[in-house]
Image (cartoon, rainbow, N blue to C red; front, side, top):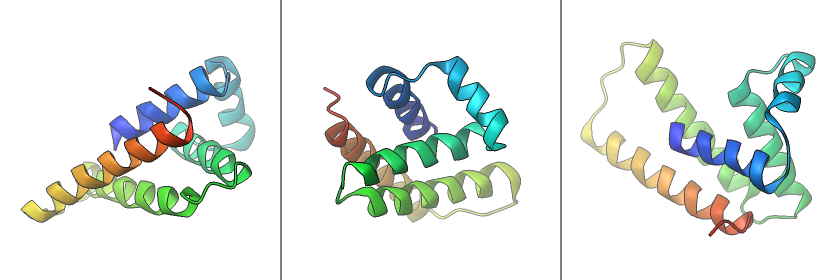
Length: 104
């Protein structure tokens, strides 16, 4: 999850030319946490680009987010297939974001 979150932050700052100060300000104005805001901004940009991946990216991002919440805040027992699935989803998201935002 965190690797995808950091990639989203990179996209916002380096590719979409947002600065960290304006992102922090937007968090305050919208009352969204950074994780929610970055997801929202990335999804908005993908939809504006008519990306065929926008819905898929959002769905996968939310799955990873739920895994993170379960791991960090709940007493959830994960099975080995969950770990493999989380890695695979992160790899797919990295590939999709890299492709859609022209990161080399």
